[in-house]
Length: 189
Image: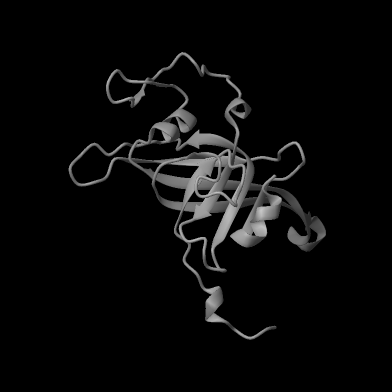
């Protein structure tokens, strides 16, 4: 084991964009910015199978790795036009403010495949000049709104919403890459 280094302890404030084409370019890296986010989190969901021995009273005697899924969750601050268009199943352009959500909408009826809206999503750190700036690429992400979505319409809380991206393999079988931005440059394409 190497020496302990506090340089490896980092905070990673950042932002999201979709459709990035070049990490050498400034944010949104040739893609589309998804408005301000309060936080982002990546959850790893693994299904494991176990084998129980009846002769040992049902004790677990073996296990095997199952499917591994990643879910990117973000709390979006405000109602950014690009975030609304990507994340909400049915949006429309308002007459003056350009921010309208229609429920139920006519464009994404029940049964519409989510892969039709899948995008490459990038978590880009605010400070890419330091060597410890961590980022993450999700090669094919299905945009989802929180199941029990609640919009706070009051004077105390910000108007925000939680959305998620279910990460699935792209045509090359890639799901995600995490690491320092300098190392991610080669894997974007």
